[in-house]
Length: 381
Image (tube, rainbow, N blue to C red):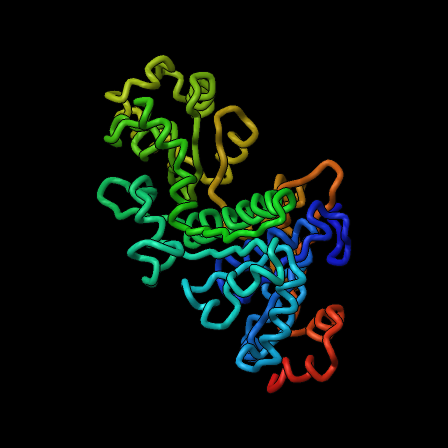
């Protein structure tokens, strides 16, 4: 079973990371590290005490310190925290941490092994570095959005998943751990520039490899992944629900045809793109003849490469997800569990995140800071 919030047996046990409070990929990166047992200390601003999202899921497993960085005592406390850590995470626009007096150059001598993790949309350099943007923009500029287009429709992607979390947060976590391993050998830290546009672009490596090998036709009518093939797409059911089919391999395609009662179709014609429009119409008509639940009962667990498209609540309650413990209820809401799993090390269970500043005295006291400095660092909070 996953370990509790106080368990220190995770694979990253003993690793201290400072996270500057923000939104999006930076707190997600901190969550990933905290799930694995790292001591992630979140530095919040006084305004956080007035927000309504205290204890949000992505702050689970972290400790929260509230500091007034406009006060010299608050900056002193922040510097002391950063000097006690192996790594720092920040997700501000380029230059913000430098203006606060907390840029990487500040710690070159006091904490020379510090790994300084920075995640932004466009990166620390380049003509767009100071431009505003969001997930939808970063993914668009990688070319990935074009892969989601359907005939006559604009491309549509799930919000925050590809750019913010995968391209930003996960690549930042990977970069931090790479740099920490190198720092243990060299004794020197470095800045990790994790740009969402870079990470999201890297996620398309398989597609670029296939293009280079001639296995990724540009025209959707010949590309099985671009929503015009009869065996790799989402299809609407009789009740308005949707299912997915992904029978790429011939054996799986043959099983799909059998379970759809399309036994008059020659399986060997699977990759004859000239036959796709007619066969897709047959498949779509057959899928529309039954409800999503009826198709689930018939196809789930088969080699037809099938899954229903579920809502977030349905997905969390699905028997396979439950059997693996992939979702757990915390304060009445579903939270995804830590991933991946380990054969020996334990990860933390999903939990409510701490209220802003709830560990201020505890954490600053561990650093041996004087009580009067701690009081001044939290002035007006």
